[in-house]
View 1: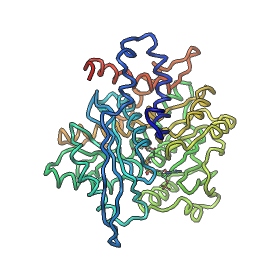
View 2 (view 1 turned 30 degrees about the vertical axis):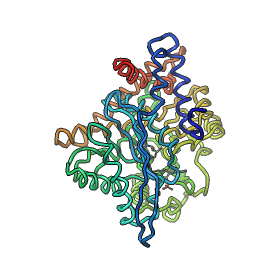
View 3 (view 1 turned 135 degrees about the vertical axis):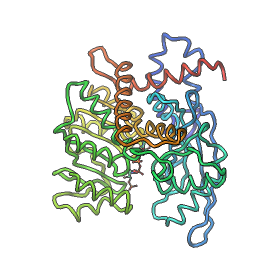
View 4 (view 1 turned 180 degrees about the vertical axis):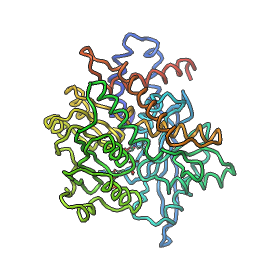
Length: 435
Ligand code: NDP
């Protein structure tokens, strides 16, 4: 904390990982003598830069942009870009740190990074977003490339933003190369990339339930968020026979006790991902549903809870409520959505707790596959990618289960994910010597 003043999110993320790693390396001097964890917790570099752009009223606006390149021991830096007013160095450092372990878990050759800006595209015209993205890339292009660092989308950076960013990268470098993922299909994007994080989370959850001799069919699920991750997770859960009864956005949550079926989900996909509308509009369309302004959905009784909006959106009281209401599994779609105290509650309660770095790794995994397709100048079919994603998520599950098995045979997935993610990166760093 003294080393990183004011960086609460980053300190929280490192603390949670260190807790598990210290125990595991206690009898492994090669790791602690080489200070591997401290080295992973110090980014390779952070680039911070001015992003100057002109709004539609001809005002000059000045924002701050970053790229945190955390660790490239096992492959080029890889991780999304977040555009939101809440973005600061602490948030990006925590995300880049987590990404390092997550990318390692995928088994693909991907290092960890994250970037973004304190610019909020919400309420901006397409022309304003384009000018911002072009200005942002005018600095970022010096630091990225298919063998160096390959950014993707995150909160506030969807296919529109990736299009503007990639167009500017191409213009500045005069090269068409896979320096960004999350591209649209017309210009080098991968099938299944939009679905991958949400679907992947459900594949992980399914594997974890199967390990506990349980399944998704007939379960009631509560989901927060209504973005890319939340909606694809909801779609997959419904197709697996579960009932999804909530979705939310930053204004509040919708409770639909009848469940979101495919037709209702079509409406929300269009509302949130195409029209950029508000979840509150749902109640005008579908009777029986209610909107709860300014609240999160964790007090709604459920078997499965999936926080898929943002960091620290589920606190200790929420965790207590979920446990008391009989939840059997928590699956983190968002990055670090549970506070440390909430995470501790879940782990102590012995229910299935699927941590973000394992459960939401499907997105970056398919991004890794987008890089492979770009390098080979090929496009794989959705079915093939879905099989690859399923197998990747099952492998991640099995690694976490192997390193996280408790004495009673149950699995501490958070511990397993931290150790399995750490080991691959740490072994590569040991091989490189003191660099
Ligand atoms: P989107 O921007 O598509 O959606 C974010 C959703 O969360 C929106 O519904 C948004 O509501 C809601 N939200 C944002 N902030 C808050 C808040 N403070 N309180 C309540 N709701 C909020 O993002 P994604 O779905 O892509 O990402 C969601 C999470 O998943 C993030 O943590 C991201 O880092 C993580 N993630 C995403 C991956 C991906 O492939 N997209 C991969 C791995 C992790 P509103 O519409 O009001 O803004």
